[in-house]
Length: 210
Ligand code: GAR
Figure 1 (spheres, rainbow, N blue to C red):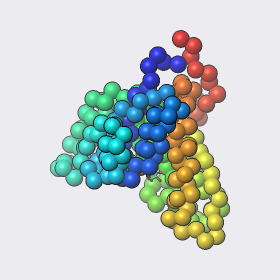
Figure 2: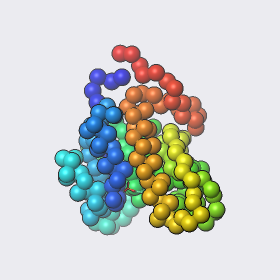
Figure 3: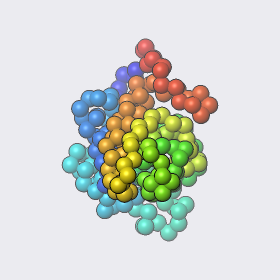
Figure 4: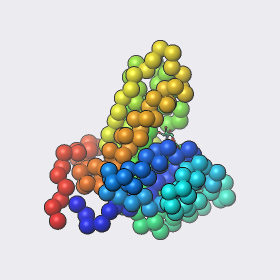
């Protein structure tokens, strides 16, 4: 266990309910962490309102304000470095991080995805699951690697798919479990209980005794 709480910075583009789950878990003491910042590519995101309400500092790196993806990535990397965060959480961050950014923070960026990976990576995961006709859907928290939605899996939760589901009803059922799954993954990270063996994440490691 480290002597100070971990600093967590969340990257989010929209509603921010997963961001809120982390704010609440940190405030309630179920994770030994400080939610030290929100970085968003979207100044109109509701996540920004949530940050203001919780007193979490916001850095806007507005994608549309940059003339190239490279310039955007440069500013994003600078914001991430300046945050001095131990862990970055992609929580509804709807852009792909470049290999350069991922390489700068090895095993320190995690993402929540609304499907049971490796099935249904990318956009509209819940609709992909319905179109495929699966009977069980769910969510995954994984380490971020260069390849989209393909990094080592930390935690997953499953939910049933109902006959009358549409993508909205299925997304809502999954979302409740996303919040639990994401907080669990962050807690395991903060407790030093995630150990990578190849692409397998072991979680049964006891925290270091310091
Ligand atoms: C969540 O369902 C999250 O899994 C998904 O966006 C939603 C954000 O909700 N992320 C992706 O699809 C990334 N590929 P939130 O803003 O309320 O946390």
